[in-house]
Image 1 (cartoon, rainbow over the protein chains, first blue to last red):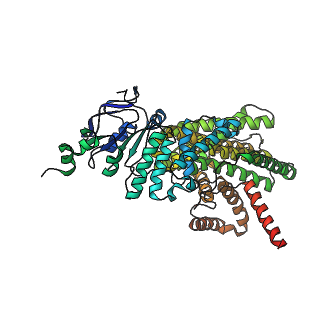
Image 2 (cartoon, one colour):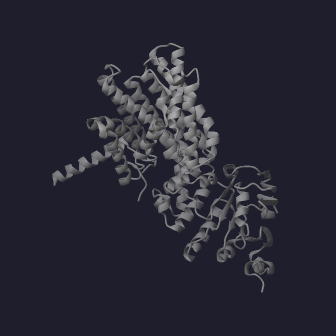
Image 3 (spheres, rainbow over the protein chains, first blue to last red):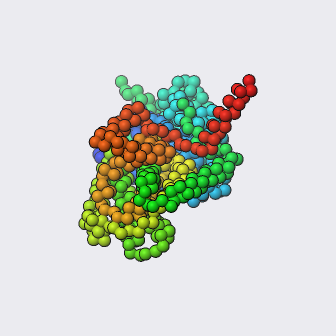
Length: 255
Length: 336
């Protein structure tokens, strides 16, 4: 197998005396779609926060394509290619849908403040490119008709889509989705699954997702990692994991 | 509800639009020069206009942090004070021709206020909301006290005998420069980053916006622009003292910003003008002046909590297009 894109070695973080995540090892290979599942409070989101620089691990190393990421703040990790969405939607609520995406497009564009102030040719050229890029991404998510709408006015499902669209606009290598289907109805979930499949191949993304919706997880994930009490208890193909006694025990308890 | 159409996509017409704005600014400047340029600096109308200009610059600069970045600041007058004292001290020390002195004083004020804003911003912007408001409030008090005790700032008496370099044309010109700067700045990727932080700090960071950096630089920029207002003030009043830059003044600026609409520069300009002129009209009522003024504020806030203009921005080209379509429609109707 090729080199892993993202690797976490022996990661541990504790809050006070509580070890929220410990002995966490993770290797994600390019173009994979991996699911991270586990009962409530298992430490899934904490793991995400560790991988995206929101928390710094008390132990262990995180590397992206061989480069050590420890100690880097979230916005730097985004530039390196790790981007995430949130369990509770975090949009720029009173900016337009288009501007939500454009903020993210701004990450990899370069013009100087002076270009902006004196409205140089370079400014207009880059702005136009950003505009086109943002609109093409909105098109992929069928959001182009809402472009000038405030983000907060979108229906719930569309807001989730917009959050993914915004993440895509940063040109990531690795996309981390934190419960993308939370609160969606079955039709919306179906649509979301298709979108995830599509953007994955269209933008050549490696995806790690946290999800409770087992239909979605079983439907699209190639590999599953199960977390309980901050530790990985099972790992492997979806079907194998679903039948693992340890996993069943973690979810249902023993009699 | 649609957002105010702020897309910059009609690139084709953009040169025309900018030219239109440029020409109308120039015409306005010429008009100011023709009608007010030769009147003595202590004329009532001139005083009023320059006061308006200073208030506008203070309001739009505070709007950058409070409206666009979303951080409450209660010590804006302190940055104005730094600007005022910086240019006053320079102009007292070195004598030079009026115009050169004006711009050198202005640049020094800009840099000094910006530098202090930067230094204050680094620790202060770690905090949010009320806490930041209290830190900036404390900072404002410290600056005022320092100005009262330091030797080179002239103590409580302040500095007088500053050359009067500020003219009405220069004031209006500076308003135009500052406002044009803020518009172009906010409608760029930098402005979008600032708005993103106001909307959701965590999401902004997760979208690649260097939050702390942007916050500190925006705060410093806002302080630097307040420094410009200070330079105009010092070179107009000819004497400055710490008492002017009291907490009340900071709050007055904040009132203008909130009243005009957080995030609307047009609103700030409008509110600043109204709040400078309104008390003058109310002089007739003399004793009840401040009561009427305060009641007016309360009524506006109750009726329009988002400020007079909300987030609306004025656009000359859009106004012209609007007038044209209205006029055209009437003509068609006449035919029928």
